[in-house]
Length: 591
Image (cartoon, rainbow, N blue to C red; front, side):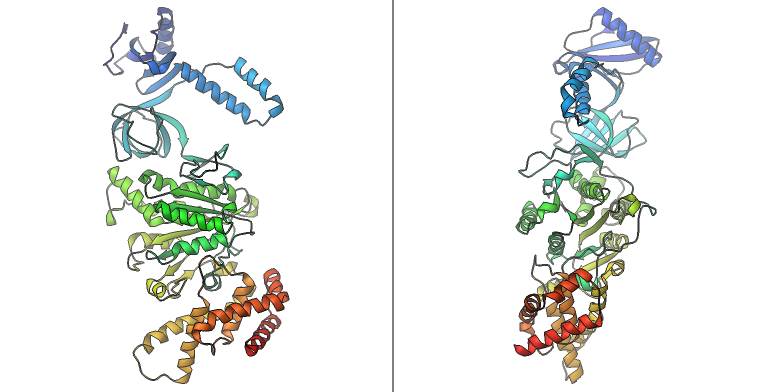
């Protein structure tokens, strides 16, 4: 049975299968007879109802649809299959035999007549498409629309309609547009050549460095390493920030949250940590989610200025990107970090910031008509970040020994750490560094609140000399904050209290650091030992930073052996401590 009807849609009747043929030149009687025999056997049908449609885009051959299944027997389909077979030859890395291998591949080429499932767009808008027909599609699978735009399945419904988030412009997608399965989950092309580059969440370069030329395809979502694959955190991830390395140390494989209000220096801590990894064989990944393009450019400029881009990858998804791209951005960055981790490298990844990531996911969920919960976030928003941050780990030596350290950033409103997203992420991470607006505006940089900040793992990874040198600094600062609060009420202070307040104020000054100027280990140790010996108490508060700088330069010029001993041995001893104190006393006495 043959008919030409350009308006009728294909459907499956009781035992008669409707087959739609798209072509430039209609098939001959002989071709139709062979097709009929093929489909009768394939679908166990009693008869075939052919619908022939003219479509110039086919170029040659036939593109055949049976319900939501597609048989691409067109010229373009042949070219596509041939290209894939030639690309497989190129990946064999046999340059001396490449010509003969390609010739052999062409001579032996046979058209694959298998089918693929095809769906149809029911509705589209706001970066979301609802499709019908892909009955076997999986959650998280990438689908391809006929205009070339890719999407990811995010909603599978009982009525056969699937929700797809789009990774491109939806202006060329209309109701009735075709969409096909790729049978691949979302992934990112990657290789070691990605270092120093700026990419979008799909892995495409957005800088001027040309193509990355990546040949590996790494999934952006994968299970976190199991307990057997991990080992305890035991190596420090030095930030170069005295307040953090001394009181809230971070270990390789740890997840340490940076939390605070807007404009309190959260990104600065992250970039300083990246800058401090120079010459330490650490790969850094900076993921910008929903930031202004100018802010991302400023971070990149800072990293370039300090030669940090050589070992850094920037995954950029600015505020101008769709919610879909902002949603997958941290997972894409995590995939880049995992690639290096599973190759035995130590990796530092910064997510800036996850509060904007949660907002992007909320937007997608509401557009997909999921039930809103607290603050309109969907019920699985906790899983959104737990499955991301759990992928950070210190792998055991049997599984390459690499590590991934995560520094997620979360923005609070008016210092409210009890809000929904902050409490979720606090419960997932291994500690938090809380930046306080009041301290920031008082000139304390970094503005770390000692009382609310904590590291639950890093102490196990702290070097022996740092652990012994820090002493009671954190307790002293907590006492100072308490005394300072009471002293504001006025009244006379006894000499001991006044001296304690002066010591605390001096400690706060010593913990101040300029942006992009991380401190080496020997500078941190010398500062801490001298501070606890009360050597800076009699120095005017406004001069403390200048005196600290002069003292450290004096050690580096005149007692370099002490600095070298600290950097290489990293072991505390009373002899070393006494040597530092005596040298510092002589220097201060000579001023």
